[in-house]
Amino acid sequence: MSHPALIVAKFGGTSVADYEAMNRSADIVLSRSDVKVVVLSASAGVTNLLVSLSEVQSEETRQALLHDLGRIQYAIVDRLQAATVIRAEIARIIENIAQLSIRASESPSAELTDEMVSHGELLSTLLFTEILRERKVSAQWFDVRRVMKTNNNFGRAEPDLAQLTDLSRTQLLPLVAESLVITQGFIGCEENGLTTTLGRGGSDYTAALLGEALQAQRIDIWTDVPGIYTTDPRVVPEAVRIDEITFEEAAEMATFGAKVLHPATLLPAVRNDIPVFVGSSKAPEVGGTLVDNQTCHQPLFRAVTLRRRQTLLTLHSLNMLHARGFLAEVFAILARHNISVDLITTSEVSIALTLDTTGSTSAKGSLLTQGLLTELSSLCRVEVEEGLSLVALIGNRLEEARGVGKEVFGVLNPFNLRMICYGASSHNLCFLMPESEAEDAVRCLHRHLFR
Image 1 (cartoon, rainbow, N blue to C red):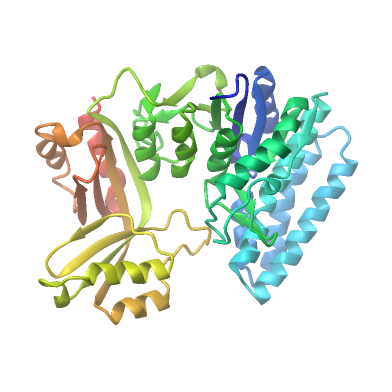
Image 2: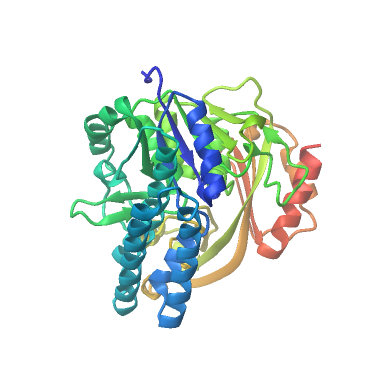
């Protein structure tokens, strides 16, 4: 049962990048009286700076990064009418970031990294709340960590849904009744009070989780593009916006690389049948994409997606031949190292599987630690191939359609396909290929299948 008049609106980094962007986003919020909760990402570029500050060793580089961070935030402060109090608060937060960076250089940890990068959302929400107050709006800044309780898997923490629901209804809902609530995406808090993060793109997930907990009627995701397209318009300028799309299709697109939505965003919405609207904060008047349980039209081919930074792990062992338990051993090792397998194919004596590093908080991005490789090597021969991309064709009832293989593989004939996955889902057909060829493959598929 949805709340009769409650929309959760999330604004991404480009939508709060500077003073002008924040005011455009404020215009959107104030144009709808049923927008009650606003979830913000860090201003564009800030999270990357904070990640770098968590890894930097040189004091000179640290000061340069802090200067860049201050430049982004103070450019907004300088446009405020009564900036004295908020300027002091921003200065205090940046000084705290500097101290955390020094600690991280002396004793790096996932806990420190999470605490460091969480400051981006704290900064953007403080500034946005001040902009609203200067416009005479009753706006309440709210620390999402009061309700977003998670496990201690720093970098990719998972929320405790029961706690989130209870705390949202006791601590957040009363505020919503009184004023507009501005809060942070991406961050949470584990049982000992340490700050956690939900992984890159986790602000979308936050918005959907809060929408679920508050029984919202809709979740609005405001970004820098007016909806979901048949592929990335930066790769294929002829890409067309999809006005309506099902949860299943959008989830497949998000999972396989469409950056408009975070893959986990849709899960809370699907559970509660809450529609998700995706639009551009730069041009809200042009409309966007509505993601819902049902749409009028579900074509055979819906979209082509591209996901970079993929790793192919090939494990060879004669022990696989007519033996049992080898796969179980491999997956037990991967589980011990907290590695999630993406795609997998097998033969009599080898397994090929892909690892997705695009969600890693670390700038280095590698999931293959020496400990993992050593443990796998004791079981089998290991080959690692990086510099790959995953291209996915998203559609409907692909397994029922005749001629899909001929149509698709004919287009991909000029390309070196390192791995193919087809049959596990009726919604996707995936190809792993060298990153240098991936964009050309996307262009070819789009040109032939979306005429």
